[in-house]
Amino acid sequence: MTLAGVMSLGTAIPAGAEQADDIAERLEAIPGMTVLWERPSGDPGYRFFMLSYRQPVDHRRPQAGTFEQRFTLLHKDTDRPMVLHTTGYHVSELPSRSEPAQLVDGNQISVEQRFFTPSRPQPADWSTLTIWQAATDHHRLVEALKPIYSAKWVSTGASKGGMTSVYHRRFYPDDVDATVAYVAPNDVVNSEDKAYDRFFETVGSDPACRERLKEVQHEVLERREEFVQRYREYAKENGYTFANLGDADRALEATVLDVEWAFWQYSLESDCVKVPSADASTDELWEFVDATAGFSFYTDQGLEPYVPYYFQAGTQLGWPSPKFRHLKDVRRYPKIYEPRQFVPAGLRGQMRFDPRAMADIDRWVRTQGSRLMFLYGGNDPWGAEPFRLGPGTRDSLWYEVEGLNHSARLIERLPQRQREQAVSALRRWLGVADATTFQLKTVSPLDGHDELQDRRPPL
Image (cartoon, rainbow, N blue to C red; front, side, top):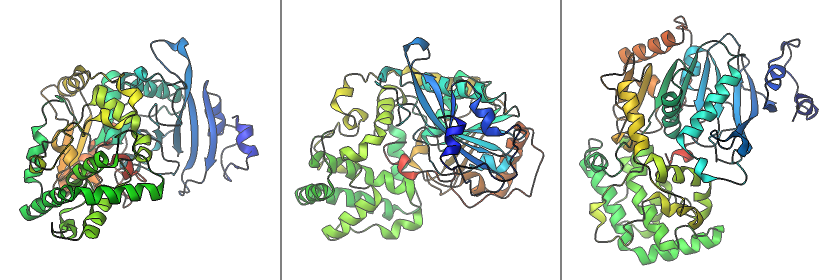
């Protein structure tokens, strides 16, 4: 759609915006770029756009077709730094500034990951859903926008988005000047997952809370027949189906396995009082499991938006495999916690795991990475296997905030000395003078970040 088409939909340029050299016109002039719409940003200093950029389906074979990749832009000023927010998933249609964008008073683009609808090639060649192809999407977008936004750039993202920002730096290290990655897992050796078992044996300071969570999981599977029948009725009432997993029994087991993980991912230790005892009623146990892990998630309808994640996990990213020893006597499906179980049957034959992909990323971080900042919550299970700095990593920082979870506000919640160090480094990397008047809003690492996109097991 042209700019004229956008304007015909009733979207007006805010009063006072520059007319002779309007940013929307400059964006439209980029080959392959389309301004889809402009909406209020909620901040008088910003304009908010949804755009799409034409990308090759296969960057190694540009002639093999194209697809439209969506991204949003929060535009402040072409002289300000640019934040590249790699979502790792869908892009939100709501305006939201990340911590880095707030701290440097910068512009921000948030990019939808390839294969997350509607940014999906048609027909979909799933062999092109790789970390290199996605990094090259981001590389082409940076190249297209830098003639307009010529100040320094920083990439950021949370969880899978944080991973994606690191992958982009590995393949195109000079595209941005620094990277701030929040709660980004790093599954270097997929078959070695003892770190997760150690985590669940030690997380928090209350052993009784850890034990009650395990007892709840065990009790629900002890009452399997009752819960399966209830699950079938729940699915029928809501129009849910179980083609991917096969039936409600298998979906129940997957949901119960999620309980311990999801609790620590999203809750704080103060929430331990909400964990019921094993002798609670079926209604109480159902409500707790539903509130913690969500019975809708392992239905076909719940899984469908995240099929691209599971495909990537099963081909390159890897996945956590806790042993669940406390459930050994009540489990029926030992392979249920693997990515290939959660995708349509037609995709499973295309999933071949490459153990070299994450080892290469980890090696680059430890031997060649520079101007990297990693932030983790101390009670987040995804932090059990984190990125680590190495002997060759330069001018980089690593933080863990005690007691916080996967969706914590991390720079804001760092101890004062570390917070000052982190903010100072970010501003130095981007050439921004200290500005103590910048105040962080009380938000998650990425304002408007959709926690449903970071459920267990999707990152």
